[in-house]
Amino acid sequence: MRTRAFNHVAVSVTDIDSAMRWYRDVIQMTTLVEPKEITTYEKEQENYDPYLARFVSTIFGPRLGKFKVCHMSSANGVGIELFQFIEPASELRPEENNFEYWKTGYSHICLTEPNIEDLADKIAVNGGKRRTDIMESAPGSGKKICFCEDPFGNVIEIYSHSYEQFWANAQS
Image 1: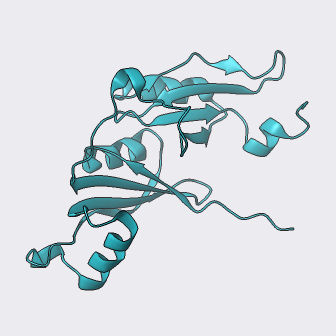
Image 2: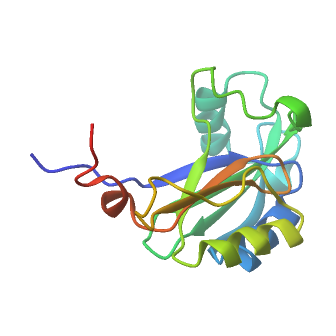
């Protein structure tokens, strides 16, 4: 049976313009659509589209007033959709508890970068941070991982090898 391809991941941030620059300059994503404001308020004619307002209200619910969205793409074509919610406003998770891995839902994104040390350093010196040291998944395997965060507290894992290379022939 044919497997499905991942299309994109959505990430909520508190400042979409700086997030776009960060993901472009640090993670080297390609900007497809610059940040655009979308509103569900009919009185705000400039950014109001009745179809789009109904569409996003159906997805996010009746509390949604307005938000900004930006579309970016990775080297293998998987997208990242950045959201900055304005009404209600995006909020940073508390720093001491922003990785609630025990709760259901998506917990992190993962990038593949053979030069894992350089990317982890680049993230850390550009407003993000390292959550862990670089670790080898099994002694002598050469397969490394590191957990970091973007400047908005979103967790980013880095693999030194592709997912398939990492896990094919792994001992269960």
